[in-house]
Image 1 (cartoon, one colour):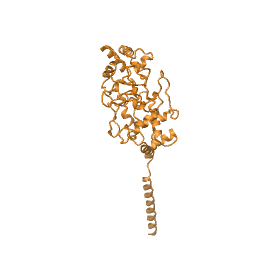
Image 2 (cartoon, helix red, strand yellow):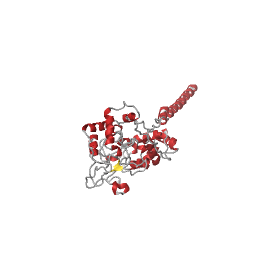
Image 3 (cartoon, rainbow, N blue to C red):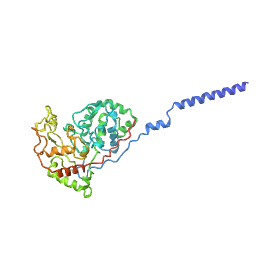
Image 4 (tube, helix red, strand yellow):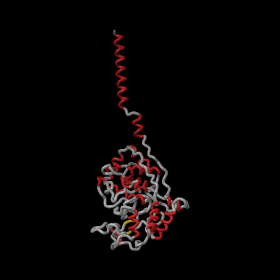
Length: 353
């Protein structure tokens, strides 16, 4: 009886030990869950090729381009967690299908706030020196910060940054790219680095200009001649198809309190109602047109410019003169503008959680 009792006690004790081992094991995170947290790997892509026929892009000395930084910026560009209400990302206003605009007359920001101007395209934005329709931001980084804090995203950068630092996948990337945790400045630096890779220079028109005579139709070739004959290239010049200057074309000047545009920045009367010349790249996809989206179609926009804009006290009469064009010439001109369409390869990445 004693032996049996001792044997039972040993079995009982062993059972208790095994039960504790199994219980403790069950409380530990599984290998699968640990791997899932540490496994996030950003998609690192080669840096975009610059436009060979244009001068080199000026990259800020304090924000050099690296594939890892661009990959981080791409994730942040698509991440709605950066906005005040979690409903919008940078991409929300710069959609591929709309020529990297949002397809709206005027942009809609966070908290469903209606803004006063349309979203400009991001094509070749890295080659620009001034940003927004009125050029009020002197760097891409400043523009990104202003959009983040302003009506577009409506966020508190410090609060959002704190949340970003709580995300393991982001924290590891910021450590690798910047040597430390995320800060508001580092977030906009990464986004700006990604935006500098959004380059358009391989449209069918570009291929034709590079020597491929079969890349475009005869209508496009005639349309390009019409474009030059009408002196459209006074403002839409060079490879970027913009002079990056500011012109009053009369849009929105027929109201009691018009948007004064560039004047608000320079306080020079000549800049009243003047807005930055938009690039013509992907222009066929980016309707409606002009800073307030008041012109619905490309055909209407062409007619307006051929007519010399809308008369007003500050109209840029040096570059805007009434011209004449036949129906065929207009069709050819539109064919040329359509040849500037660009394949948008901006794809949303998997985001860290």
